[in-house]
Image 1 (cartoon, rainbow, N blue to C red):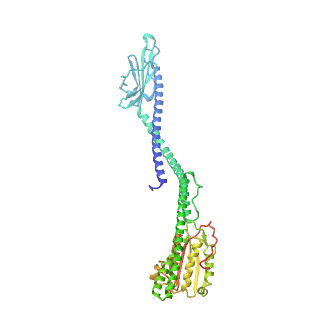
Image 2: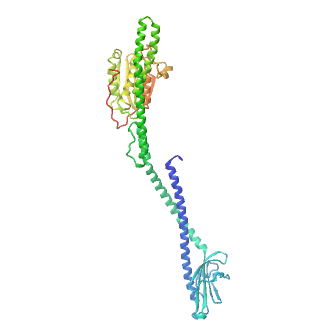
Image 3: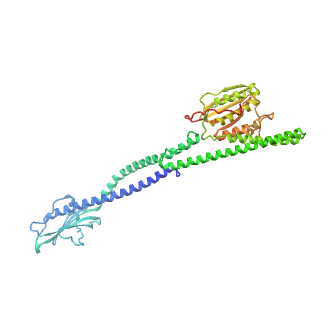
Length: 459
């Protein structure tokens, strides 16, 4: 999971969201606390001005305070204190405690916010209001302090956070879901590139193409360039192998001609040795020529095994050995294998020749679809091979023909063709007879069967 881009982005987004929501919650709590404090200060200022009505009209004494249960209960957390000249009045809630007045009084007509200790040492939010009662030299200072317990502010803050946290959690979940959707949509082009790479492997597309989002076009372009370079290199390698093999054919033919002349002169032992080496080299040359013709299955068109097998059987029936064989062909129409038609012709030709060479009377050719593969089966009623030799049949230079007529490259070439298209060649004794199965990937549904190429080897 740690290698997944999606999970990395989701984890980074979740951490960023958690940090942002935590900072937002802290910021909202601070703003709420300040707002509540401003409201509380405004309320205390109003109460301070209301207590100014305790001053008698003569302005020399204080009258009885207004009734307010909030200030009658001892240590209720709500307190007031009024000082007019030498006279001092306190709320009953203060009991015998006097609010400290160690700070200078604000200017007359002004108020100040104070932080004072309460009767029980609790912190208080206080507002001190200063007024002058009377005129001129007879004016008397009036000092009013109204305070409330800060624990009520903290309680309000905790209540606000308690109500806020569930909403922050819901908001975080919604944002995380939105982030997941955004990441999924953003990474969809990468999945599209992956699907097209898979289509390249299956032969459904020749190249990735450029009809993709702008951000992934450079990646797709580089992959297509790499495929072009690889195809070009493979083509050059096949051409070099074919040219090299063709270059050897003429000298080998000349060498066989020289061996024949030596045999005519009575040098049979030397001629036989030369012919053995030359024939072995010719088998390698023929096999390299066959391998050079093999096409990669990545961009191969669809090939229908039915028509190809029918034409090959028609060619083999014209040979002396094939005319005596009962060919039983049972391949349904519409089957398409992901292989070049020429390669399928080469493979089926080699398999049918082997079956014809070893059959007593009958060769059966059939094909079926098995999951995502096409299975082409060729069975003969011949003697089969020893079980111990089954694994050695595809080795280079090993011939199935007990008479020594085969060159020993047919099954090896078929194995190379199957490997080139990610297929498989399976060999088994049929009891009686011998069974060969060629497993090939089925062609994509939208692939069109290529036109069958001529068969110069069997004509």
